[in-house]
Length: 180
Image (cartoon, rainbow, N blue to C red; front, top):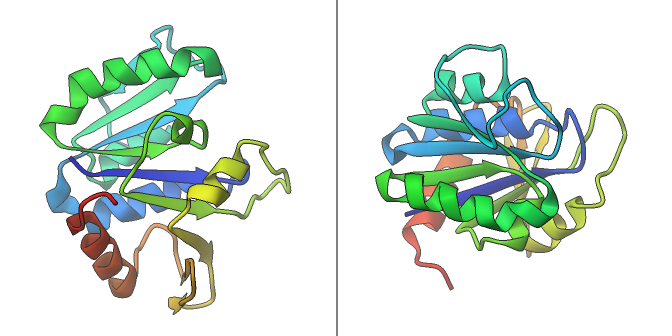
């Protein structure tokens, strides 16, 4: 099972767009996409499975981008560990997992972690610190697709919803490597 985490500095950073780009770039990987939030949503369930693809919600966008399953997990920090156990039990055997969350990094060790640092609102979530420590790469919007190599690779993409061929190759290579 492969696991990716996409975290961000704040609302509107592009986390959902990047996940959709990754889903489109890696359609063969049989992804379950999971958005984790502490904010109340219109669903009473702690783990809600989205069934309709579209543009209305982040989870419907995941399905439209190619996720085989899309989940919305609503949990306070103290409950997240137990809820993640349930997600793994019910969904990990059937494919790979991609999470939109900062706090999930307190409970899992993914093969890849992406940091999307920008925020439309200018806010910076305190939980972004763990993403910065764990990130294998940062991703940002740029005028054109390019890569800045270094100790931590920086991908600049023309669109977060469309992964560059270079980034797709890098992700596939990293997912082939076993965990350190």
